[in-house]
Image (cartoon, rainbow, N blue to C red; front, side, top):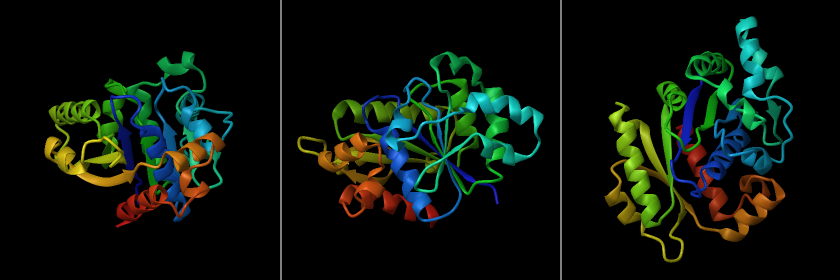
Length: 243
C-alpha cells in the first residue's frame, strides 16, 4: 500500500510549524509503522535536525542522483537518519547553497519511490509558495495549515487557504492545526473557526515550559514529557490519522 503523504505548511513564520511536524511524526512513529519525516523548509536552517538532536550526513540533494541510478526504492534507506522514536529523517539540504538542486522535476520521483517503502511521509514544506511546493501538494493526501490564535496569523492562514484553493485543491484535504490554542490574550478557537473555512483538526494547547524544555534538549515533547496536555494533543493527531 502506498504511503500517505501529509504536508505541513504556513506562509507565516513563528507559528510552530516545524515543532508541530516533528512531534506529529514522532507520535506516529511511537505507535509503530514506517515513518519518514522530510525537512523541505529549505530556508529554515537546521531547525528540524536540532529539534530531533540529529547530526545528519546526507540530505535529499545527495540522494537525488542515486534515485536515477538505482531503480530500487530501498536506495533511500542509505541516506536517511534513524531517530530514537523510530522515524527516519531526511533533511532537504545540509547547506543553503544546495537549495537550487531541489526542483519539481526531481521531488516527484523521490516521493513516488518513498511512498512504496513507508506508511506515512510527513513533510515540512516551509513557508514559500513555489513550483516545488505545488509538486509536493499534488502528491499529498492531507495538507495541514498551522496557525496560532493571533489576528495576524489567523488572517495569514485565511489568505493561505484561499491561495491553496485557487490552485484547485479540494477543501476537504486541507485542515487547520491551531498551535498554542487558548493562550492568554489569544483569539478563541471558535472565532478562528468562524474566520477560516477549513476544519480545525486539533487544538495544540499552549505550554511554554514543556515546549521550551523539549526544544532546549533536542527531544520531541511526546518523548520528553508524554503525559502533558501538549504531548497528548499530538498523540490525538496520530490516532486520528490512523483512523
